[in-house]
Length: 501
Image 1: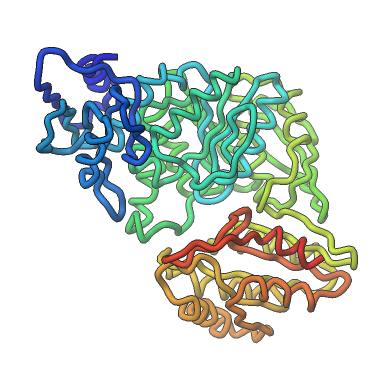
Image 2: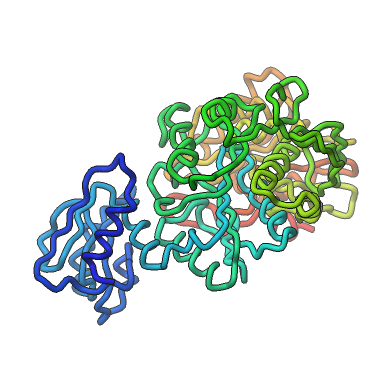
């Protein structure tokens, strides 16, 4: 595709709230563009059809690598201001969004060839995405997924490195899905991804919202900023005939339901708050340590008792969200029920392990106050013996939540171990002391230890457990590393539990 044509098509696709985009062409024969790269190291020497996107990251500006990119063979640049290199340049006030649009165009607009389903919210995105994928597959659609745990191209899965990848990478994944015969894609939409324009060029047919609790405030500044980012899924990334669901049990969900009446359908696990007509309602919940069942009532009055290997009322809410999204898209209800029942355990989401000595271990991603409250309030009444919880806060992330989670641990657990998560640039000991303050000021007086070595902490929790006890290893879920800022060390909670056994 000629550069001037690519420029013209980007311009046509841009959101109306952006400033004009400019094209600087140095001669009358614009080069052909076949590839886009935003990492100069991925430009093969000798190529002659690459446009290099000078995207600004958290630490470095891609403009610093433009010269090397041109030297390696880039024949054009996508950049925020004119650079002193003898190649054509597209000048953009939003390089990150425009590079996603460019890759979408170069890949043949793959999202338009798929039924696109997007879910957002603080907690529950991953579980809802897995359930929705299971439902879509049960309906006969070959389905891929992009999310926190894995990237699934409808043929194979690889471990994910972030919830919402950079825009060009998303477009490449979608193109792979199309090439693999996929008909549907389920995607988690993070607040960072939405705010930074990584989803540019994608319109969803079905969308869902779970909840909003304090998280990522070091980036969004406050809850209003956080909600504004999430709201973009419903304002900037939906097709004209879109449909979806939002949680009526959440105040931000109610805001969306009010704003997008006729598009978003409410779902609720509470008889008291399910006041809106047309609500998907869960009732008569029966929970054990091995799964749960409950009655789903549909907006048209139809009902079905459904079983799931997942546990907890909050997972009933996640199931309802997936059911409501699928139902709003016209998915047969028989396939919906089958997909919910057949959804397997989700890595790092109350992932169960039995030690063979009567002790149950759950590995969970709970890293916020809301997530921890939900996990511990679910497991506490299902525990015959003592409840042990192990958790550590991440560094450089919402420090205000640390003592709050410490207090929640004290509220529900009999024994707490404060350990290391991803300290990044902060001192693990300082982070642990912040969490400890919440345990102390709770006034509960539970037994607790600070064990900064996470492997040692897990082993101590398991060594002390007895028949009838429950051990919760929380915070990292399926993550396979610990980020120490200057280095990243391989580590898996699940593998550590299995190694102990």
